[in-house]
Image 1 (cartoon, rainbow, N blue to C red):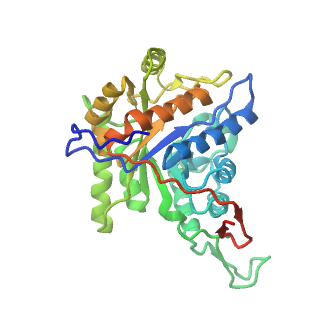
Image 2 (cartoon, one colour):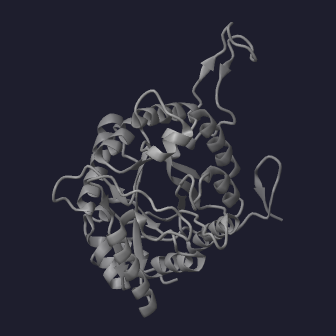
Image 3 (spheres, rainbow, N blue to C red):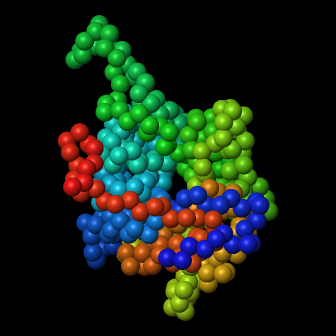
Length: 377
């Protein structure tokens, strides 16, 4: 791998990318089935780690041809990887029991040696409400309530003190989530699609990841300009509230580097499909056609072309310039071979010019004793 110095075009406004990640939906199609999709998802994480990626993210999508339960997947992928972080982007809290999620997340984090990163959202899907059941208030308010409860639970706070009216535990016992992962809360993020949600993340004291759909932007404001404004608001509110520097901010984007004529044509076709079909673009065979994006929503651009063209486009985009971590959004219908090629070409042809360096190689442990410590012969 040819690791070049940052491009001389790297402007003062462009933050060097400290981490490089990818976002996959762990999709499957009707021909091959979900078991193969899950196995290929694990293979993708393994290859990304070998290439030096610092983070891997998986999108949660219920009732479709995508990953619906990310935590068991991360527990499995964590047994095949050793240093890459494994993250959800995103888990909609409206459809989660916050205590059960806290137990599962803590267990998963301990199994994978503290490499779990969870990005949460407070959005909702009306079709899902019919399955998960209604709530007494509106969906977003309920999602925020469950998010707050989840954050309390993973922080190890007392959830209930047993009273005389309770049964099944000693009087006065303090009920907390177990097992407890002491550092997990510091690795929770808000999946932000608006200025309001970014400010909420700062108020909660959690990290931020910005995705490929935004809403509530100003008239005439480009996707990248609004994204940069969201990130700036998050950092400013964080500094004001906590008097510390905020955590690194991640941004997901389709950055497709064409290194052959065939790939350039393939990525240009995806770009056209994304601009015309929006969030319905690139679906695996059998996947549901999603509802149209909410009125006023913006879809992120696709950064595709030759390596030089992609570098210039990324450097000039305000949203990507403001981020600390670039997360490659993989087209959902692309297969394992296509995705590995995207990962490889990004790290070899573009990422070094963004100030990125791969994660250092860490030898694989050969055995693990019962206490959890790693040893080698």
